[in-house]
Length: 253
Ligand SMILES: N[C@@H](CCC(=O)N[C@@H](CS)C(=O)NCC(=O)O)C(=O)O
Image (cartoon, rainbow, N blue to C red; front, side, top):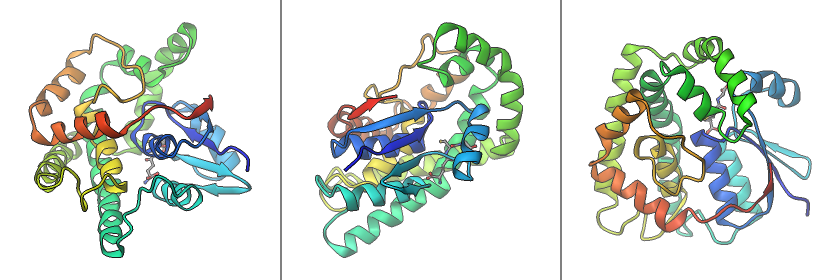
């Protein structure tokens, strides 16, 4: 069997879901990392869409993080991410859907609203892993890219407000739901925990998130993290990362 190829953005949460699933199952894979802005041109011609993650394997193309995880689960079943019990599996997949469709966009809208005004820092953080001159070039082009991102993701004050409320709701939910067994569904790590921890990663920034974070953080980014720091939901996110994130199975980028 050939190695799968993952099209991703390094700093982003949905690609992190796909990386985590592949790493968890120790599937050797190749990562193709793109930057917001140029990514649209590179992906639309190739795959007919610009959102990542996209996984290509053995002639198949999976285009959404839930579809990628489903394919990874079926192709490399061990260790499992889906609960064996059909009722628990249904619950885990429902939670994945809630985090993917309602919470992810809300967190992103609220976070970006506070982060993006810091032009130089935001550009460098998004362009993490690139050479110094590439980061400089990206920072130079970033004001135009940022304007497109804000329109594309509908980032404005009202969206940020609603996004903060949903972020808090999600943190309250994971704190409460994981109290009994430590996990969101049943008593084992599953796709529900992987998804919740990943979607809330920008809110809690667990040290095991495997992407370089430039320091010091400018005020917008620091303030965002400080707001959630002491929440019990962030303790859950940090514990899930600490105990289950594991190390990369990537062959290269
Ligand atoms: N629901 C999709 C969301 C994917 C998504 O929003 N990906 C972001 C990165 S976090 C992206 O590629 N954005 C760039 C774009 O849409 O142009 C999934 O689960 O894969």
